[in-house]
Amino acid sequence: MLIQPGELLAQIDSPADLKNLPKDKLVQICDELRDFIVDNVSVYGGHFGASLGVVELTVALHYVLNTPEDQLVWDVGHQAYGHKILTGRKDKFHTNRIYGGISGFPKRSESEYDTFGVGHSSTSISAALGMAMASKYKGKNKQQHVAVIGDGALTGGMAFEAMNHAGVSDSNILIILNDNCMSIDPNVGALKDYLTDITTSHTYNKVKDEVWKMLGKLSKFGSSAQEVISKVEGAIKSAVLKQSNLFESLNLRYFGPVDGHDVNHLVEILRDLQDIPGPKILHCVTVKGKGYAPAENGNQTTWHAPGTFDKVTGEIFKKVPSTPQPPKYQEVFGHTIVELAEQDERIMGVTPAMPSGSSMNIMMKSMPHRAFDVGIAEQHAVTVSAGMATQGLKPFCNIYSSFMQRAYDQVIHDVCLQNLPVVFCLDRAGFAGADGPTHHGAYDLAYFRCIPNLVVSAPMNEEELRNMMYSSLSHEGPYSIRYPRGKGVMPEWRTPFQQIPLGQGRIVKEGEDVAILSIGHIGNYAVKASEELAKEGLNPAHYDMRFVKPLDEELLHEIFGKFSKVVTVEDGCLMGGFGSAVLEWMMDHGYQAQIKRLGIPDAIIEHGEQEQLHQLCGFDAAGIADAVRSLAEVAKAH
Ligand SMILES: Cc1ncc(C[n+]2csc(CCOP(=O)(O)OP(=O)(O)O)c2C)c(N)n1
Ligand SMILES: CC(=O)[C@@H](O)[C@H](O)COP(=O)(O)O
Ligand SMILES: [Mg+2]
Image (tube, rainbow, N blue to C red; front, side):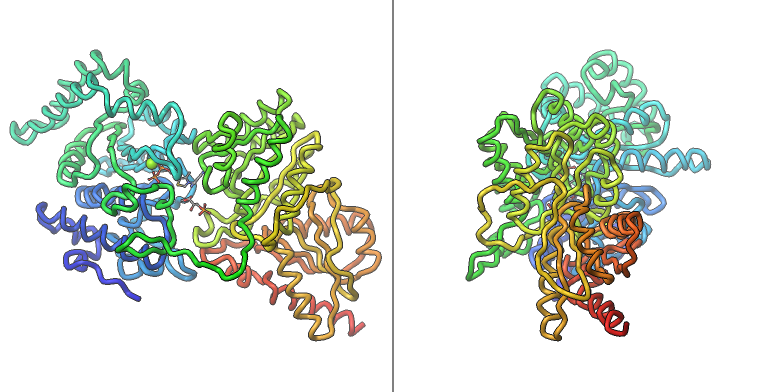
């Protein structure tokens, strides 16, 4: 279903068309843009509240800036739907996040207006600063560089590293702080309190009003913004700002807070700021979900990415299955950690800004003094867990596989070198689905298995996840457990805990000719493949190896003693992953089997449904069956 834009939006194919509109049409274009986002996301799904919150900012930015010559960088990029629609992708917007369609995030290969590929948080200031430095170096002094960063993304350390640099860089960069008091869940931390304070402080706002009054006089008196600013700057800095404003202290000229939903005012401000050289920050106060009542006034976390919904009633569509369904892995984690923590007072929970996504919110609610959201701060999450572990605690640090990439050094340096007993739970391991390559958890098996001391495990089902969490408690070093986005396979999952001996795999099915060795949830495809193959008279054996490190050597001796044809299956990168581990082991132990490794190839795999991507990479049930067939044929031929 192609959704029709409003009358005015229909005429906008690029920012140049937008710039041709008279200023009195800007409110209308914002309304139509908002409606178009609501219409599309309600039908096709995707991120929602964040884009609604920056409609006015998006219109104002493209109205004032000369994009794509001026460089506009969106942080995370989940709020950039309006930007996509205004920059030539309106007609493709119904393909957003769908296999073969446009990406849900800005992407350089998709449009010249997407200046920087994003998806992971807190990169925008660094990227925009790099662009500004390049412009300066090339003598392109007129070019503008703008980073739009949310209050959640500002909690990420990289944002501070970038501001620390920007403040002394003398580069022409504008940071727009899109402050809606929300991350995916409510934003957390002292910085959030600080932003609320400067938004509400009377003293501060008095000074701020003076500045804006003077800015308002610019056009009247015909003076340059630079002149006026320099006049007021000294007074403001010595009076209040320098002492009380964090950003001013970092040498960033601070403007705001301003109403991020007043498009006409935003246009004026952005125009004025264009004349002010050097690093500066504009603090915009916005509302996540603005303009769509259920999102604005309801649970903003739910409306971050609600799935499809009835746009009139605000009812979010949920499939109601007729039979009991397996839980999501994240829910098994969330309930199990509470169950374990009730029995073991050493257990603590840490999540970097994903309480709902990881289900750590269950523990945060029932044990608020033992489970913490530390902000979008994966590096800190790992090291703060390491600190707790030095004191005899048993932290479960839950991080999405792709976000864990951020904290690699902390895992090695702060946890594994010291052999500290931190349990890493890597959610969203394997293909993330519609979020695409920025979010696929493709690399963790490979990047973890080379680290000494670290246990690398992956459950094939909910029961194994519970048992691995339970077993990690008696391990005296770091222990990682990876599991995918979405549902498991066991409707009755609350099974009694059982110890899984370290590095012990299990046989799922005896067989002959070919052995399938799987790791993690993806092994359920092998079960299906075996069922299909049985219809053809083929009977492969299947082993759920459970650990990539340490490998089950006893089981491997048994397998390679019996089979000369082996298929390995993983939902991780082939290079250096589980199959590589098995191959290395085989060579080191003098076996000579033919091994076919199935997994993610050395390529960027785009967005799509998880199953589509498994099929694309040839490790769905059909792909596994094909691999077994081809090896079985070779076996017969001999
Ligand atoms: C490194 C990293 N960690 C976690 C996330 C998941 N994530 C995506 S958006 C988001 C919240 C961002 O909040 P904010 O920047 O304030 O944007 P808003 O949604 O409020 O507009 C989080 C935690 C991510 N994208 N990248
Ligand atoms: C933009 C972002 O990074 C998150 O919103 C992400 O899309 C969440 O993914 P899940 O839906 O898997 O929690
Ligand atoms: Mg926010």
